[in-house]
Image 1: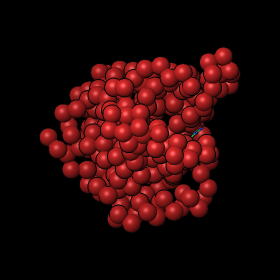
Image 2 (image 1 turned 135 degrees about the vertical axis):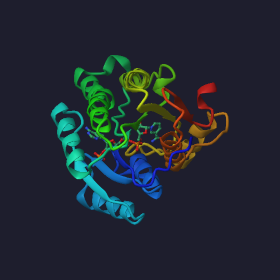
Image 3 (image 1 turned 60 degrees about the vertical axis):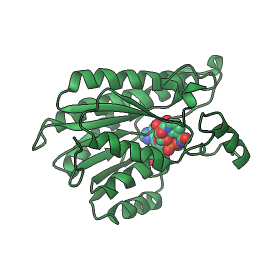
Image 4 (image 1 turned 90 degrees about the horizontal axis):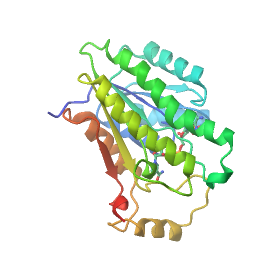
Length: 250
Ligand SMILES: NC(=O)c1ccc[n+]([C@@H]2O[C@H](COP(=O)([O-])OP(=O)(O)OC[C@H]3O[C@@H](n4cnc5c(N)ncnc54)[C@H](OP(=O)(O)O)[C@@H]3O)[C@@H](O)[C@H]2O)c1
């Protein structure tokens, strides 16, 4: 059945900018009020995103948390409960993305990546599930944003790929454990937005797109519409939806 999302409340991590911001805006367009998590984004950036969200006629609040710290996850969830009386949707989008050769991954790199990409979604899932159980009609949806690392080994990003592969496993275990009230799904975007600060040229970006079956890169909006789809369709759980132009087939 298709669920009307209007009036629901979503926590989106990494929502001040880039893909997370577009996900928050797409949910707001459906009438969902947003708790926009951010970490190091500037106050002006956060204000701008909140204004954009509010322009859809929904409530919007921002919460800062460094998700590499377990205590910060705790205060993020406390703040979520303080701002809204319910929680219907969680999108774990915030992520660390470090390119390294396997032998160059330091203990610090490993711990940061696992803390932000895996432990934080795990702790948020635990806390969110408890809050969702208190909703007027108990239940909710959790969506974990993975990437190609969930599909197979990725030599240039070893620890990152391991974290995303484990995030897909967390998705499946959570779906199994939290049903029937809570649905948990994952999305694997292909290249939808050039990595910040890597200086990828338009030519290089086009080449990256050529690796997929459909020979093109995508957009954050492609991912955001998939989030709305997985939130709305109440017969889907434990699923991984690839929004990657068939990149995994080649
Ligand atoms: N971009 C793509 O083409 C692509 C492709 C495949 C998968 N994905 C996945 O889609 C999601 C969003 O992608 P993206 O490219 O927009 O993200 P990104 O640039 O890789 O990640 C940046 C986001 O993560 C947050 N973040 C980073 N470190 C954090 C920390 N210690 N604590 C809390 N938040 C932290 C940032 O918040 P602040 O800026 O506020 O610090 C920012 O919102 C990620 O999960 C990514 O793996 C993206």
